[in-house]
Length: 158
Image (cartoon, rainbow, N blue to C red; front, side):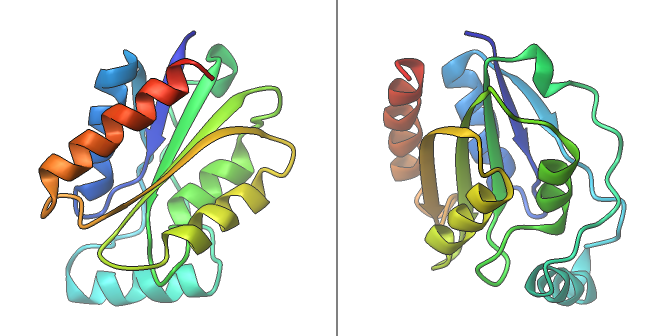
C-alpha cells in the first residue's frame, strides 16, 4: 500500500509526529507550507485568530498528488481547538474520495477530539481508517513514539 503523510507544523511538533509515522509506514511526506508569516508572538496570535474564524490561507503548491497514494495520513497542530488554516486549505483543495484517510493532531493540552471531528467534516465521504491525538508531543517523547508505533501497526492492516 502506497502511503503519503501530509502535515503542517508551526513549531515542529506535528513534523515530529509526521516523520515518525512516515518512517513506520515507509511513506512519503508532504509538508504543507503556509505562505502567511506565522512566526513569533504576533504570528501566534494571528494564527489562533485565523483558526478560530475557520479561515483558509494561501499555501505553497504541493509536490505530491494524493491521487498517487492508497493511504493519506493528514496531520495538524491544534489551534484553539481547531484545524490550522493551512490544513483546512489543503483538505478543500484536494480530492480525497476513494482514499483511505488517517488523521492526527498535536496539542499542548486539549482540543484534539474537536479538531479531528472538524477535519472529518471537511472530507465527509472519506474512508477514515484511523485517528490519533497526541498531547505534549516532545515533552512526552517516549510515550508519543509508542503511540505512533501502535497506531501505525493498526493502519498497516486497515
